[in-house]
Length: 539
Ligand SMILES: *[C@@H]1O[C@H](CO)[C@@H](O)[C@H](O)[C@H]1NC(C)=O
Ligand SMILES: *[C@@H]1O[C@H](CO)[C@@H](O)[C@H](O)[C@H]1NC(C)=O
Ligand SMILES: *[C@@H]1O[C@H](CO)[C@@H](O)[C@H](O)[C@H]1NC(C)=O
Image (cartoon, rainbow, N blue to C red):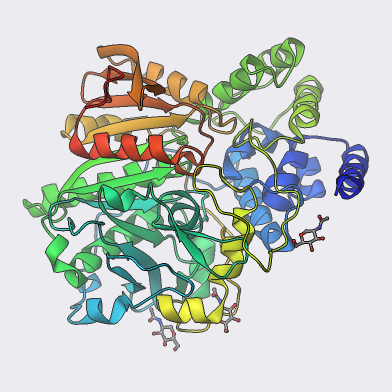
């Protein structure tokens, strides 16, 4: 084992020297396969691409992740170019939605009922999975997985949509199977165990693989994959929801919330905006949106970037000199064009070398040193996250009997299921800031909670703090620890206009993976509209 690790280290070190460092090295290790040549040609990318390796904590990335990373690299390379053709201006919602986008869904719900997932322990709640057509003429459909609330309380609890980021990563892979869903996959890749901190103790939870090209979601018009972007994602998600509520009519007037992490800092407010605008236009509550919750969220390019480097410095990952070099010689604004000086570059290279052996998404976490599945499952633990989980989930969701049970891949797609898409090839719009959307939601009485796992180094707590500071909101409840089980669960501050900021202590980028109990407490308080507990005497 030790020997293997040494060989691995040497291999990586050799590579590091050969390719001359650079943040791409971290990308290669974590998300897999960010091409050397790409980074050489577009060094400015270093500034922002950090955000977009949303998940994964593998030392040696399996081949299946590589193409995806290149696709994302392509996207952010473009985003940073002066004449990229990527629209970075304000979000432009598509207001016109064809009436024919909403189809009758009679008896479809019953067809989508999942009897039992392979290897699943017995449970007392219902699960559903299936496709929803969002564009009939293109043949575009999104896959969803829905778990009703536990303890027979589905009638009284709200409906919660969870979306993962990327762009291009799957809510089924991360949200459902590694974070807040009712099950986790054993290390044999075949059987499941219970997550006793599943969010379906607090809500009926809906996971959607979005946009088309992610996971099981697809389009029969494959050119759709070249036309992806924030606006199209929002409108497809919206059409999805309208149809889904036809299929599951009992949820039509239910209180509805949207939550997500990472690039969801874009998707969630954009979808919320779309819902709000259509409710206003229709002069009726088509979707009963009450609030949004976004975690370690990409919100504002400039503060996100600055906060990332400041986090690395303040957490003793990089030297003061390097941090100084970054601050002095690099630009944090995505508005500025692709020019990077040698001094900025050398500070970047320094950072790459310093963080190479870290999971930057959770700086104190162990890495996955052996991604092989085991015949006999390792003893599972919901509270101690297994860094090789991506591999277990990949095996599970690619198995034919699992896909059949979940009503997934019914059209026999020509590519494997991947946690992050390797077929979405272009991203057309990605605003440099989402702050105006948050302000609009707050002005319309939508509850906005922004949370942050405080050991994430990618979209860290400093970034979120800078972003909120930029919003210049009066403080309603001043900064204080919040408690769970007599421990500090994190810290919180509440602002006028109903914006709550909350940290989750000891959690990385995927908060419910690393601090499942604190995450469940957070979502419970958010949904109940209750402030996080200010004393250690819980409730
Ligand atoms: C995509 O094409 C397949 C094969 O023709 C068809 O069965 C399926 O219904 C189509 N999907 C959509 C969303 O129209
Ligand atoms: C990785 O795990 C597999 C399955 O448990 C085992 O057969 C293999 O020897 C391990 N490899 C290393 C390098 O530890
Ligand atoms: C869909 O099924 C086909 C045929 O079994 C398989 O080759 C492909 O990998 C699957 N794709 C996905 C996305 O599950």
